[in-house]
Length: 99
Image 1 (cartoon, helix red, strand yellow):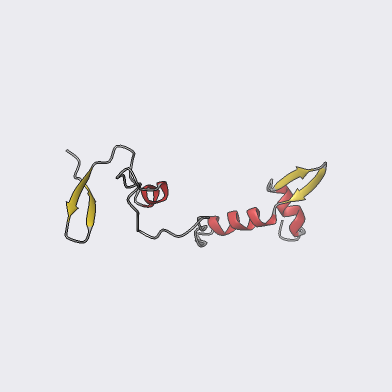
Image 2 (tube, helix red, strand yellow):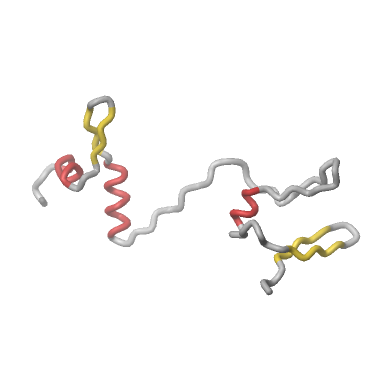
């Protein structure tokens, strides 16, 4: 297919979608797959949302909430146990070693 037009190559490779009864060629997906097949790593997609501040407030009922973004960032599962170290001006949570 060296002499074929780019649109025909994209179509033959299956990077086509139909929107409102119109055929659309998905060039971006085609080129990303092509680069991936050649071993070219693209930058990872950025997560949407705010940046993690690594700060938390004590709630009025005395609880400290750890957001899901922190849990995902550290690859923790819901049953992770933490050791709590209390200092004069800080509290440090450290994931406990699995028993």
